[in-house]
Image (cartoon, rainbow, N blue to C red; front, side):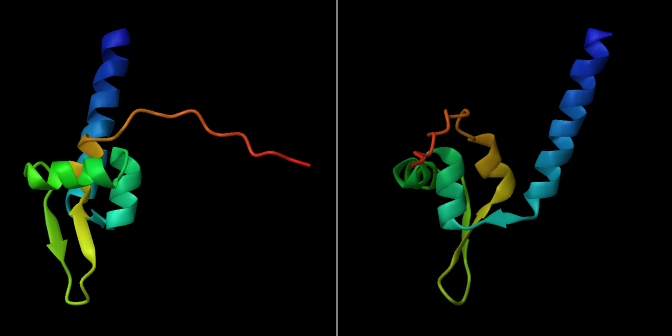
Length: 82
């Protein structure tokens, strides 16, 4: 039973990554996903994330490659209420 659940999760993950293979993230979105602009720039320089520039100078990072470098979940900062 447990193996079946793991297999279903892997199939779902594969489907998500293939969906984002043809879609992209902006520079700001990609930086938020991987853990910051510096980390994003290092990944781009090393060739692990490909970037396309549009005619307006906007970045599009390949979605699948960005998601493969997803930073782990961080604790949410609680908003202070008055």
